[in-house]
Structures are given as C-alpha cells and as structure tokens.
Image (cartoon, rainbow, N blue to C red; front, side, top):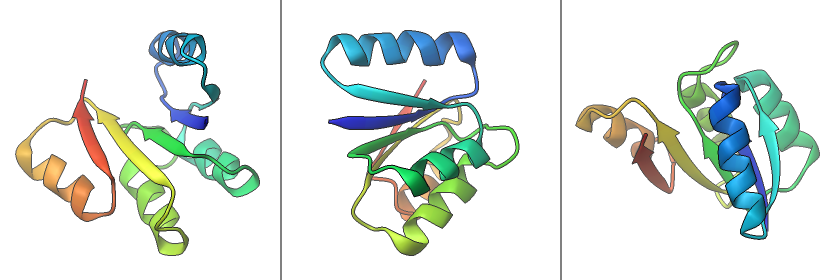
Length: 101
C-alpha cells in the first residue's frame, strides 16, 4: 500500500513515516500543499494523510482540488484543528476520516 504523508512539521513527518514504513507501507512525504498536489499528480496513492495547516497551499484547498477530479483515493485528515465545525467541514469536503493530533 502506497501512502502520501502531507505534514510540514519535519520531525513529526519523519516519525510518522518511520512507523508506517515499519508496518510495511511505502510512504512519500510532502512538506507543503503544492508539493502534495505535485506528488498526487505523478503518483498513484492508496491513502493520503493530510495535515490542514500547511505552507503555500492549505490542506482544505489540497483536498478540494483532489476531490474535484478524484473521489476514490482515500484521504485521512490528521490535524491540530479539532473543533467540531472544522471536523465537519473536512468531512463534508470529502475526507474519509478526520483525526485530531
């Protein structure tokens, strides 16, 4: 299973990727929204783990652009934004699940 981990906090991204790889997943890391979309456009991912607070392009905008052309790729939002309205917005925009850091 191939994953795209979109996380701008380098230490957190490396720890998450290490754990996922140890569990047998192939993991690419993107540090900002533009890099995430570039990776998505040139690769096929089974799951995108998406932070919302990203430089260059917000995670919700990344999600909106992905969902405009692809409703099948699974997207898990992993974010510090934890208010109920923020979770509802992410799910309404097409995320398959939402996990608060």
